[in-house]
Amino acid sequence: MKFKHNYHTHTARCNHASGADREYVEAAISAGFESLGFSDHAPIIGYPDGFDSWFRMKPEETALYMESIRSLKEEYDSSIKIHCGFELEYYPQLFDATIDFLRPMKPDYFILGQHFIHNEYDGVYAAASTRVEEFLIYCDQVCDAMKTGRYTYLAHPDLIIAPDDRETYLLGMDKVCKCAKAEGMPLEYNLLGFSDGRAYPTKRFFELAAENGCDIILGLDAHSPEAFRCEKRAEGA
Image 1 (cartoon, rainbow, N blue to C red):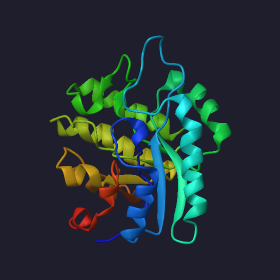
Image 2: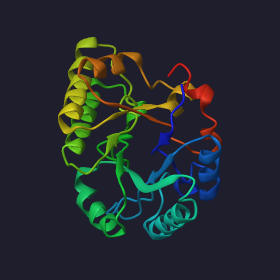
Image 3: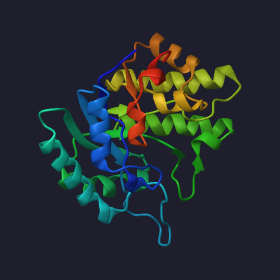
Image 4: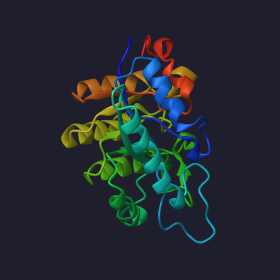
């Protein structure tokens, strides 16, 4: 299976991706993509004093990020359509301040990529959580985020470790799917998780999404230009 549009692309500014911005664009063009959306991890405004996130750009890098991507958008306009956005966590206490900081830059879109329950400085990493209560809190937090109306789609919706108890799983994830359907928000089948053999994406989540009539979007979650050599990654997705 081939697809021509990817809106989940990172840059080296997040500290866990590699390659120059231009290399991502040229790799996408070479692979036959018609549109490319950059959505690197947005800075979060209002962290407690002394806390420094390791996996997102810093506030002072944001303007240069926007400038770089928009410059490439103009340069490659005849070859590919480029968008500039962010992958943004939903931390309720810090959300408004973060949106206020990012709004003047006029990003094209926000992807909801929720990696933490509560937040990253006094919360729990979702892919490491094994408690039923935390699973349900995560599902509620994702739904609250979707209801803000700020996000375009939900990335790796099944990143969190699923509880063994089927009833609990259905209670939480059915709520996520129903909320996504109500808000008109696509759910991402994450090809990085697929190609790396991670715990997500999961068959049972996307069966549940199908039962709820949810829209599905493919996302490379590209952390290097090589991610755009995706023909084999997408085969069987």
